[in-house]
Image (cartoon, rainbow, N blue to C red; front, side, top):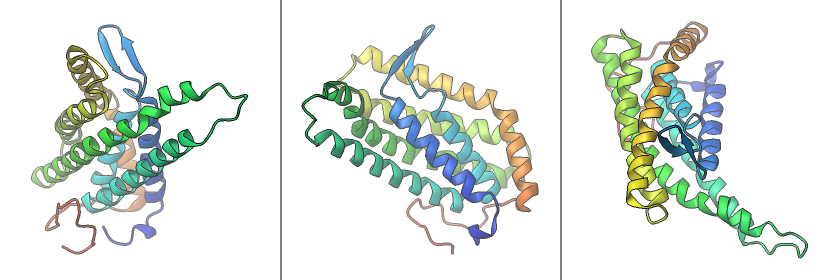
Length: 228
């Protein structure tokens, strides 16, 4: 995509994407039970980042999405380092919350590592599949593209994230339960919010006057230049 600065809403979508990513990685330390499902606390927040990824790729193209994904990674690294640094500072004599801080935010760097590696693979696969399907389908059937790309991306993301973030902390059967339960619910969130995705994509395309088709571009995640 050329001249992102000329688009009115690109920056707002990008900031929202990064904010959702950072919040979800913080609250993911809590494991919750929802009926028969055992999942990370970010189960209803993290999938929104995939929706933003779909919107970015569908409206602005893969190259724009690639840049914002990297921005999100940088923000996660900074957040993790800040949590770690504050945890290392000596506590005030009257403050008794160090154990609580360590038990919650002390896990965040490992969770961020799992999220970064999982999201790197999952989100780029998600964007790649959606981008390719848009060209193949000539822009038809957005719901097939968003759900199909999420099925691929979330599967890769879920396995990598949970294995790195929680292996050795929870027993193997709990690990499998968290992966499977989280995957099902995250895909379900994408399906339920498909009408919202449709509405936002349609509005942005009209407002920005753009509908990007990724023809003849490099899909290399490390290729950040605007040229082929």
